[in-house]
Image 1 (cartoon, one colour):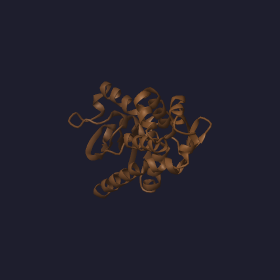
Image 2 (tube, rainbow, N blue to C red):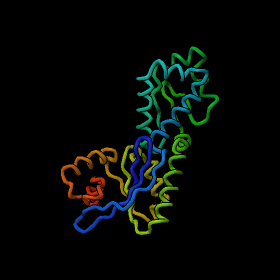
Image 3 (cartoon, helix red, strand yellow):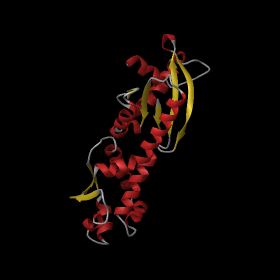
Image 4 (cartoon, rainbow, N blue to C red):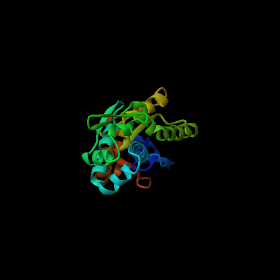
Amino acid sequence: MFQQDYETINFTAHEVLEGGVLQKLFEFPGNEKGGKNVLNKFKQFLGEIFCDGVWEEFEEKYQSEVQMMLNDFTCLKQVDDENPITCPTSLVDLAEKKKDIEMFFESVEGASWDEGTIRITREKLMSFFAETLQGITESLREIFTRHHSIGSIVLVGGLAESQIIHQHIIDQFGHQYKVMVPLRPQEAVLKGAVELGRNPQWVESKKKGPAWLKCLSEKF
């Protein structure tokens, strides 16, 4: 299984022992290609669109509205399709001090202006994930090469909510491994921590591990 944190992607292997108790086998070194990496790609792209210092000024003066755009993107990256992102009026005003806002989109590929929203193509959205998907694939292949007894992949954490991530893992490894994702993969981490506090016997005392995995083993 692997857990996708905001900045990193972490990999851990567990064995389910008799009675459902978990034993941690090993941790594989994570990488810094988590959700923050994808988000940074998106922000860089906005900087390419709103050039001539417009995006930099917007980030400096309207931090709360920048966060709103990032939140919209967080929802967008959970799907595998083209969807609009609302462009704040303040950003429009800053841009139009330079030129008509539609002109900002003439020099970039993968985005268009649509009556107050920014439409990002699926191809451009996928490009934001490219490094992350490559990092996941390389790490999992190395793990499976070293450890042949692994039979399932469990995805948890915020980035695990992305349909792009799901489909990529299935395409790359689904023919050989069972791929499982809880209904709310980000909440699974928190819920697992609470359950472990209530039921410490779920994990061997000398090898603590995530209780959400115990919950999943019961569910599946």
